[in-house]
Image (cartoon, rainbow, N blue to C red):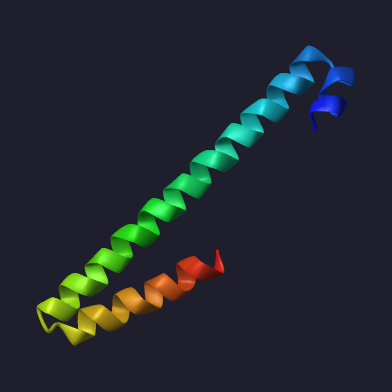
Length: 66
């Protein structure tokens, strides 16, 4: 990608850099959310709230698909 960027205009390079940064932010967002959901599952299990645990497990499955 770096080699291809040398041939692009400055505005195109800026746009590509912005897209790459946004992608990194999304990855961080989903990893943070997965960590939080896993923590919520452990807390629900500790509190013996199995209904809540099942809902968070379903959410975790959905996050793994994304």
